[in-house]
Image (cartoon, rainbow, N blue to C red; front, side):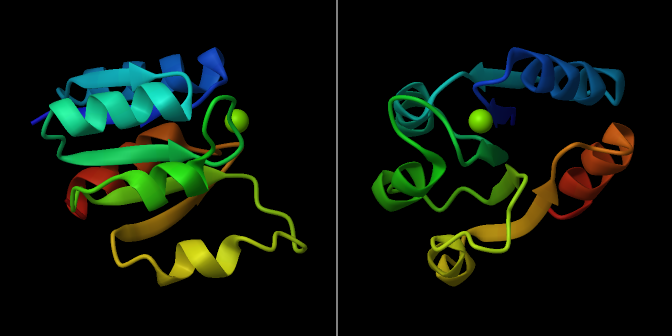
Length: 116
Ligand SMILES: [Mg+2]
């Protein structure tokens, strides 16, 4: 099964796709929350890497509206005053938080693959 990479920043999306490909895994991409929901609803993904701050729909809305039990890795640069973090922490599908910027993108791939 493929992974779905969701981030509105093309550079982050593409570098994740390349890192997964280098490890032998295929990915689909979505550049906003609306696109992400469409893809999640019509495909079965091994896991979704989900940005929080995005146009159309943000990561919180994607989590609220996605009906599948696909594992989610939240990718974001959280700040201490993020009031929505509690909501994300309560969603049982969220496996892990991956903090941007990534120091070692191959370690991220390894972690996601090992947990799904
Ligand atoms: Mg973003």
